[in-house]
Length: 266
Length: 264
Image 1 (cartoon, rainbow over the protein chains, first blue to last red):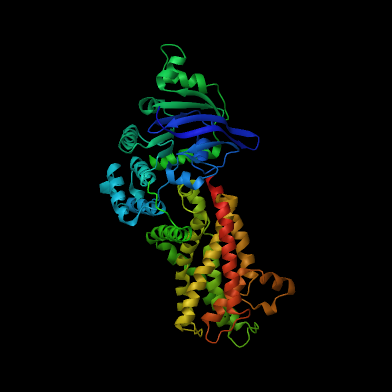
Image 2: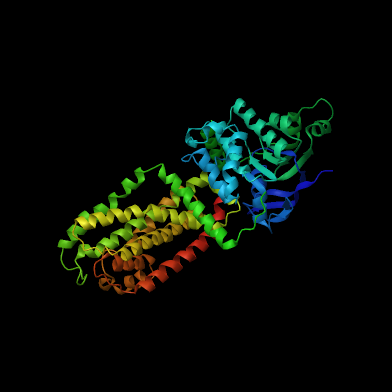
């Protein structure tokens, strides 16, 4: 049994009378690639926001790398990296400058900063583009720069909210190749949300499906497929657990933000 | 992960300057803003100031009207630039930039103060414009280096104060449309309820009382003291600084409390 790096216990978040995340309980092992699936409005983004300390839970608790998200938020922030769904690097700076600012914010010792930045650029295949303005990057390059920026301090755990939304299949594969490398080289645990089932199938060690704020299913792809009897695909699993139609999926605001992101990255 | 111990105070100061550096690096790539901003103080000094200087007695005492309003116009242009600064954080929120900074271990107050300082440094160009025009128009400026240093500090502080106020509004309203509305509503009252273009002595009692609660009044008073040859202060430079500094500290603390709302 490997070490648990993320432990979520009855985590709940209400907005008024609406329960976005309802007593979510699960744990993730060190070095795992863990996917969180669900239809729009299932509570995936709210979950990530709570785990990254951006949103306080209404009740329940989670521990990231041993630190409580409610009692030790600063320690949690030191231990994690976060790649939000929307574009989080600055287009009016160079790739290098974007990394430099975060190297300083994460207290990398001055002597190590340049080496870490070069290493991160190289790791993400951006060495030749470090001096260019990010505004001229392609969508896939922007995502890889964001991942470089979030992993400069070698976090134990990296949270990614829809890391490949709006990317073409080639750029998507490149992003995933780098994410898997990251896990293999540094043991970084990856926790991500996605709408793409084939991505979950190809890369996840385990996955969870959320439905209406609750955990609907949890396990490896094979386990989940087997749970429906033989001959089922992950698509069947998804429809079975998250399919009962809700039209509540996502607000106008979140949808327009998502499309704008897709446009900017595309 | 490096487990070096970082002293909270030096860490805070360091992070504040990293945020300022981030903002200034962005500015470096866009200079058009600096030029378009110069227009407004030029209009106030060249048109409003010239006309009112001929208009008769404005009770400005021994100093000519144009000399009287030059520091007021500098304070006003700092206010106008700073009060819309918050629109930037709304823009950053619509992208994911605010969220990423908030998920880093940076103290919230450093995020807020760092942005305020950068607004302060941005508005220094306004001081250059107002000084150049005033010199051309024959305003008797005080070129004593210590006085100039005071003006620089006051401009940076005033911009920090009002841009932090702006950031607080942005954290509350969260959308560009509402922000622009609130910004427009606040700017003119702040300007008119101050001693920028007329002395408080000729104000009706109620307005005079309000003007004494308005930090802009103390900014103008301090600037008038330092910018003009033989300028004198109504409240005393010490009181001016005390009011400006404490207002800034209070606003930064409020801003640090509200800033995480942008990630929700």
